[in-house]
Length: 155
Ligand SMILES: [Zn+2]
Image (cartoon, rainbow, N blue to C red):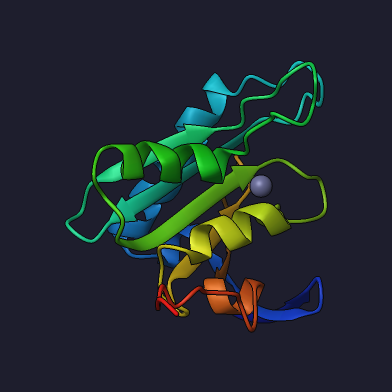
């Protein structure tokens, strides 16, 4: 069953995991699995992400923290960087999984801008908890309205 919800001021849909297409369930499951590899001794907040390329390949990433804090890389940027380093710059959807008792974990501001470089406004973003009975469904534009995209035009 789907329900409208206001999450952090953004209208979003919360759907039952079982109601999602098998391809989306697979993406969320990959994000859940890679979360086990998170290197997060400072926050103890493991996050997993999985992004699907336009030709169906899935790249997974986890957060990789650093003792100096600043060099820390989020799961979303790890997954996207892995894909880009393999030659993929076009994506169809991304899933992000972390555990918060009463909320879904959405991409941080830096990750929202980072993913907006490579995706369309309406690319779905799925956020779930590891138990995964419900999934918060949004989009890049829903998470980052009026996103900044350079035109690459030379002046
Ligand atoms: Zn982030």
